[in-house]
Length: 186
Image (cartoon, rainbow, N blue to C red):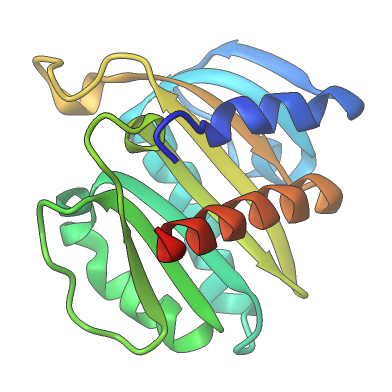
């Protein structure tokens, strides 16, 4: 798990689909997010937070106790301000897997499982929101280009990838499931 990058896998899987490169952006509209199946872009934390919120809201509106959600907050403490939203997503999802460095303890929930990441893991520097359900298949994956040593955490730069291509999302979800099972076996 240490050398695995979901961002790199997403780029590799997308080679068989049409990908639009949006370049550096400060904002992506809801319409662009929904209408563009697969795209890459560079952005800072507020843009990724907005896109994550779009996905999380869709899960809350469309989920029917089916499907899985995979998220990474780099550090679990980054989830603290939105933990209530994820507890509700846990209520509506088959399972929610939360990846991150274990620097904070989430409230217990029967449908939420924590996958601790070592600090030197490549996944520990990735922002991940993947939803694989019958009603919604979407992935937002970003690589933190600056890290937590940046003077202003909200101004960190990310290289990002978004897709709603069902085949790509299912392959990404399968890769994450493989990581989960391998971490349980270790």
